[in-house]
Image 1 (cartoon, rainbow, N blue to C red):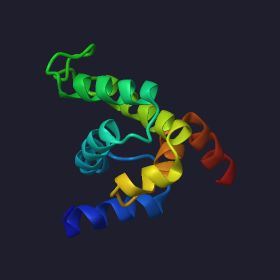
Image 2 (image 1 turned 90 degrees about the horizontal axis):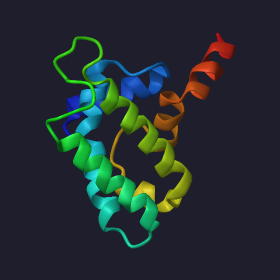
Image 3 (image 1 turned 135 degrees about the vertical axis):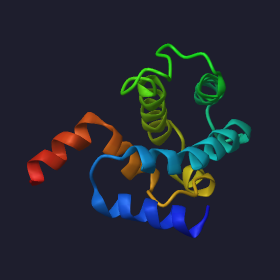
Image 4 (image 1 turned 180 degrees about the vertical axis):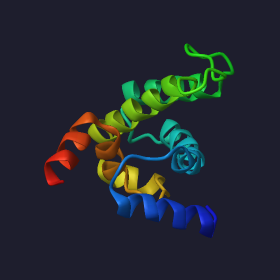
Length: 127
């Protein structure tokens, strides 16, 4: 992770709002590394490993449910898949394991909260 990526992700973490397309792009390498590391870790439940491997294969596959060339919708399936996967990881993988393998500026529990509808509702109450 470069200093520029780290500062961009740190800004996103402190903002507490939704992630921009640029912030998503900066998270992609960290998410890819996390998926690879979790797939090889013996402490991760087998069902979660299967989801991690399946999600990784889907994200790497050039054919998507929603074609990427459709403006505004092209990456929606990928974003939703990552959001659901992060939420599942936070719920099923021990926190210590996630901390060992995650190297993003935004902590995974915070990322999961920001990606969820619950996080949007909680933010709306604070405003």
